[in-house]
Length: 431
Image: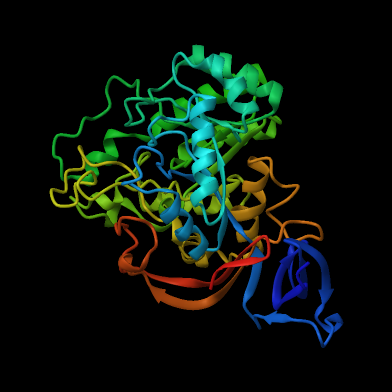
């Protein structure tokens, strides 16, 4: 039996506030929480001074892409990047890997690979596509944390979008299990939306995926949620036009949660250069005014959590050389930067580490059904922890990041907030 270790700081986020505490770590769990004055002198202590200690972060939306497309990413590099970013749990999406995770067998293969290669915890979503509605229950019984569906083309041929027919069937099952349906909420049925003709124009790309797509999709999901009682999670919300619908639904008590992503909080379409495919994602990064309203909605509690939607690919698929925004793979690579990108984006909102803990740990743990063991600092919880300096500044160098392909729109950006150490079940995995 290993000797307990005490991790201490003047700023430990616990019980909704920052406090000077010592965390007694024993056999992978938080065995006790002490006042700093109560720490025995002869005890092994790791003292982080005035740095912040928080629960290990949970990124509830990541594309790891293994098996089948490990040349895009993979468990080894993705989980190294996570650990370097203070993230102790990743939730992997069911597409981009090959096979896509739409059967219990495909889910089992991912679980086995993660067990062999991952440096942090990995959870997995199953997928809903036309024709696999009967697989939803078996996916959940095999350990899927939820089921993901697209309402528009996903970009992956093996993962087509669904219609109300498949959604109804799946949501009835999910309601019984009280597991979430995660939805890429864009409905592309508008007959008059603008097509992109200039492959380099970011403005054309933005206008080709209007906010109305998100509004229509979210209206559909609110109605289906009301009908079935299925928990619904809207992934990567980018449109503030959809917020009134979501606010009303939540006021009525519907089980709907919402996430946004750091790139929607940091960037604005007015500043994105034409032909810079690093910024291409779906839904797109929108205007400055939209970004500022997203920040306010987050601070006001209308958005529950933040996740990276880390979706990398090789440089040739990202069309880095050609700048072709029509052909380029849509996805932002940012896994390691979840905390500093969020902290930097929201400094003008008087955000605190307590807010970050809610958005990056507590709420993701609730979404994933894991709040009984991770996501907060409490006695008996698993000792998944991270320490960081909120005042440290650094300039992002993409070549220093741990994810496989060194492509990110954050390259060269000055950020605030530097991760110093990460612990998984009490074992230091970074720093």
